[in-house]
Amino acid sequence: MGLKGRDVIGIRDLAREEIEEILRSSRRMIPYADGSKSGSQLDGKLVTLAFFEPSTRTRLSFETAVQRLGGRCITIADPSASSMRKGESLHDTIRMLSSYGDAIVLRHPNEGAARLAAAASDKPVINAGDGAGQHPTQTLLDLATMQEAFGTLTGLKVVLLGDLKFGRTVHSLAHALAVFGAELVLSSPTGLGLPEDVRSSLDQLGAKVSEEEQLHRVVRDADVLYVTRIQRERFADPLEYQKVAGSYRIDRAVLASAKSRLIVMHPLPRTGEVAPEVDTTPHAAYFRQAFLGVPVRMALLSLILTGKAA
Ligand code: NCD
Image 1 (cartoon, protein in one colour):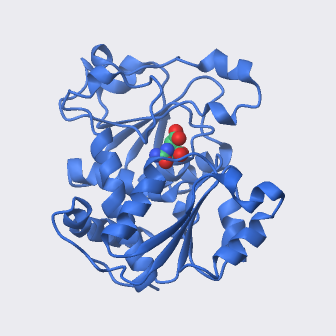
Image 2 (cartoon, protein in one colour):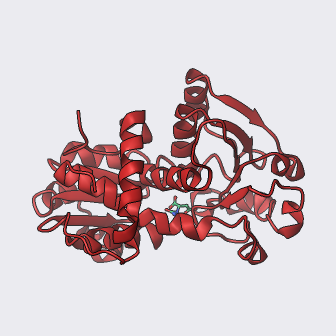
Image 3 (cartoon, protein in one colour):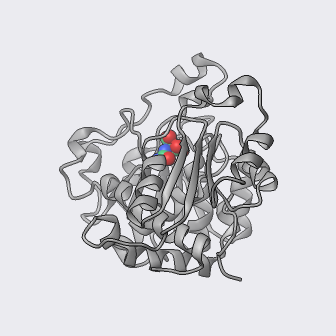
């Protein structure tokens, strides 16, 4: 079928072979991403970045990806400065933006917003995070990070730690890991477990999934410790957030019993779940992970906009 012209709203929109193609292409994009080669794969392309929720890495890595490949961006980075503030509907905003650029990258606080946008747009829409829904491009870079570290995804034992209820990165990642045959260990504070629909999709895939609350137990035989922040902004009641805030923290002491090859990942931003003292251990993979967002998004955009891999 090919990825040209396609929307990417949830990770399920991509077949396993398509994910593999993106990961292969992203490895070839690394020299363009780190600036050692200059590229023109997106020459003449205009990408619209419509961000209605805060973002640092996602927006700027998309922008870096476009610019380093010779394309250009138009950006809404401050929703209060757009006409949505005047009451314009998402539908109208997106329909109009789709007549300006060649693709739309959307981040929005409402789950389902990206699907709605795709229906309003006649250009490809890439979901850069829709509320507590999905974050498929984060998953692609998460997979790229694990593949770079271990050479494979199959058979890896991956702990998903933190706010699995509201964390959109883990909703997309859990599904993809199950597709690739990784083993999942879910570890979350009480009340913040994976939503039922995500959980049942793992069961349908026949994934090996277990649950464990004790940190020292999850660390011992894991290959990947994927830590997430508690999504404070998604709690309706601040008191509920206070009950779980600070309930887990990865530091050197916690990692003392880890395998030497364990990598600690985090989509970032971190808010205390991973102590800065971990940064200088060989386990820390989160800054490499953030960098890999650039080649992965280069690969994805090239395939969607030109049909060609690097
Ligand atoms: C994540 C997100 O926005 O969902 N950040 C990111 O894109 N790297 C994770 C988070 O905000 O906790």
